[in-house]
Image (cartoon, rainbow, N blue to C red; front, side, top):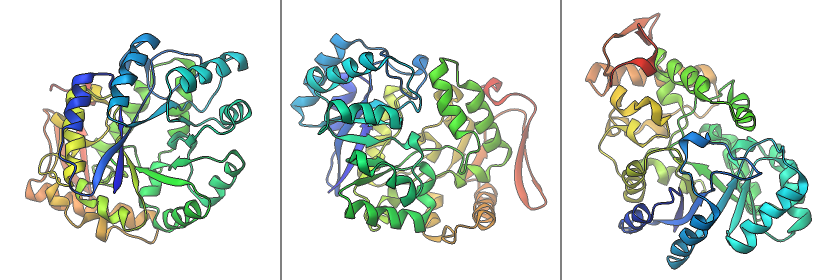
Length: 357
């Protein structure tokens, strides 16, 4: 039975709703992941975009999760540690002994070492923020005995490396997990810069603006991103993946039910953009429409050779077909879609975050 790891929105009604979804398709919710909003150890979400809860509320909510016998992965996934060591140790002690998390998801090698030194047997998950792309990347962590690795999102379509890491993980008793609805640019050149920005407390809006503006300007980037459609989870199960992460800690709670339901049912007949973890401030499902059903067969035919050019051209040809058939649209005033040297492009006369909803 495949497992979903789903974000914690710290809302009991939302929890009850998603756990009430029929789980009869060979996949079920096995874990909740999240963090409280404040603490000495940082996590890679802007404080203004996640639910603010304190320790008292978190402890009470954890009891509700325990009733359903679900695991809880506590997230401390900033790549940078800028707290005093004793404060970190105290925080980890609380997470393990009072909150009673099942595991901790970490990106910083330094933080992993602190956990191992003080809590040698506690399960550590390596966050996707750590950017694990190959066996070589995994090898540096072996001494720390991680239980799980959530791979860099590009691995979803780096088929050769993905196959190698799945086999290597099995040999070393490491569970390999991939993300389902991540929408970041494939091979994003500003990924590390974006994640490191959270340690400074600055807003990450400039990164979302840059990323999403590029997706609108070159719509093939929307398909090139490393999402996995609900219907295509089986493709990765056949490769040996058993655990899948639904991203969306910063998305509205009402969004979570629809997204989790789609992956549990392995079927979705609406706008693919609705499922993806795109910046909630953009209201992207009103801006962009891509028919999920029109992408049947997309992953099966995606180039497996690792050629950047072939991947780009494949996604460009698909998005042109979708546009011609009305299965891809940009639904905003001031947006002009056209072809330039065979590449479908879109031009707007204003900042995409300023366009009317």
